[in-house]
Length: 469
Image 1 (cartoon, rainbow, N blue to C red):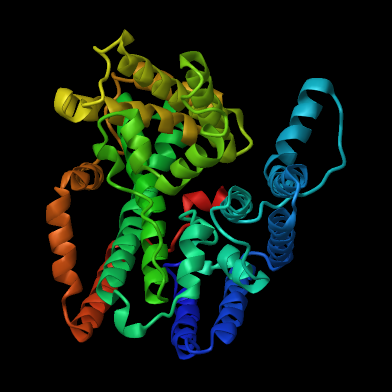
Image 2: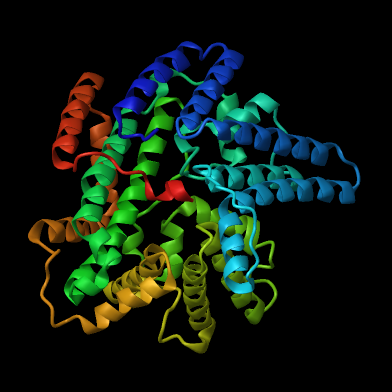
């Protein structure tokens, strides 16, 4: 069930008023919201509702066992059991085809032919489950009731594509009283409207106008088309993913919940490190807190730090899919982060320094943007061979004129990138002014905005890119 569809609008038109009508009856509200979330998830494949329920029970049992155990070895066993469950399920569904294909291709070993369907959003709710059990183990949160945990893990606004909300962020809000007069309706409407525009008007348009062709058959187009196809994909994946999380955060706000921010103008970053502070922020913090720091972070010397960066980003790439190109993409960013850290430690201050905003300015932003775009070639190519084909055409195709690039495509790409350089204070003032508009005028304005989006967007809405992860 996609957000920008009439099916979801009808679903939410029932969930929103019923949810608020049940606000004075917490148990009834939780049962209703759990049922609604399972219905939402079942719209893709009802079979996987059972998987989600099993993951909920398994992680709940592990968290309780960890909290009640007196011996450290038993606590670790409970956490380890949860990791085996969560990562085992994730690995089976995401990497089964990869392993069986590798065995057959490299060793000539055949395996039973199983048609494995990837449950949509499995990585997101798996990471939330892991963070809950680990936080209980660390003493950062107490085990909650099964119903509360089930609502947390399945809450439909962020179930299939984030943001990755931690139990320490969600459960306190679940326990607090929610009042409809305190809902930030204006901000929610802004976020939903902005997300719709990003997804339907920008992302889907660029995919069909230039990106799919430039990446699908790069040898048929010149270097200009390929170059702007790369720029177009950078805008497409940002508009697609941040558009989803804008809508998710806005929908959650209407239900009385505040989700963490997931994007902060990433293409205005002045370094790779700064980019990862701004891009998919909840995943970046998850990788830092549950992988990089447990590996030792930067506490065990420079070589160990560089190793930890490479391992963390390599596994972060593997999280995106069972393909070598994703691992290379992760290692590419890990190597970039290691080089920046090396420079910051004093062995290459001509590359990067801590005060990069002042020292590099627009040059740092330009270099970072193109470094990230180079990574997007790997990310979107599917295979290393196709990535090399894209890079090769970019190097050799300058004798062929543009066929895909036109003024509308150029305006969409350039305008989307430049929009990220709007000063944050000005954006906040605009947002505050819009939020203060009376509710009736907001409703009329939102309806008009929907008509604009429908008129400007291409026919039909494609799935969000991150649904496959």
